[in-house]
Image 1 (spheres, rainbow, N blue to C red):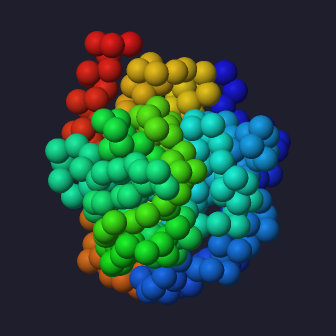
Image 2: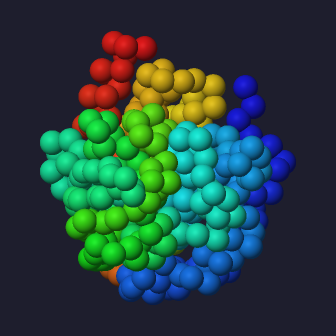
Image 3: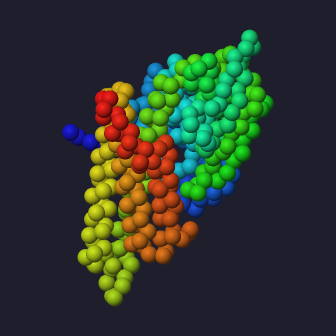
Length: 363
């Protein structure tokens, strides 16, 4: 099987890589990532002009891609530059809306002209506690959402809530009365927020899915693939940085890469990264050609593999660099933080190992 990108996908990857290298080099990325609003508006506008969001969606909704490998290409390049632009929210909210039958807001999302955020996770792990009560004029939402990525920058929130006994989805303007957003910086760059909904009134048409479980599953599937690909791109760079350091750092008059112990360690890193690449390729293929538990099992396998490999790559890269690997000025430290934190997004290694086993009994 030929795993090389098609000509169109390679062109997409090259275009995105050149743009991000020019507009979001490490220093510029860090200035945007660690200060409000947590991303670079100029870079976001440029991504919109390039039509990058459109690559994440099929032609049926106005995009020009939408396959698992299209998602992989885009997020792998984002991982290579540690981009903090809100494309994960674009992907997950857009996929949820597609599964729910599509909405007018989807056009803006696919065009990259609107920043959106998925407000689903809650502080307590006891199930969905946010509620939506219907009346003659619409819905009233009450509850709180935790760790909502880029909520401060978003104009629309896709909010999950229990409505008439089922998980429903609502499109809520971020500036609606009763919505309060308390943002904070993420340790790996970008910003997230606690979103409070106190008596938020929305119209009847704000409910995009009265039974949103399937739509949320589609959003999660796309998010798992995207995060796995992003981590792969970041690991590629961390690996290359480490190899370059082993070739140039000298001790006892020779490059430290000449020492056999370090050669063995970097060889292990190389093999593990390639294994992770295979897992992401498998996940991209499953995203397109499998459904239900069979697809989700492959995605969990990829997320678990990425988490375990990412931990190894981050630790080995830092250790082989020595103390300098921990410094703010060296880009490697930021890559290590992002690789580590991706493991905790949408479920960590432990959760996805358990999910993989459980889904094996169903598939």
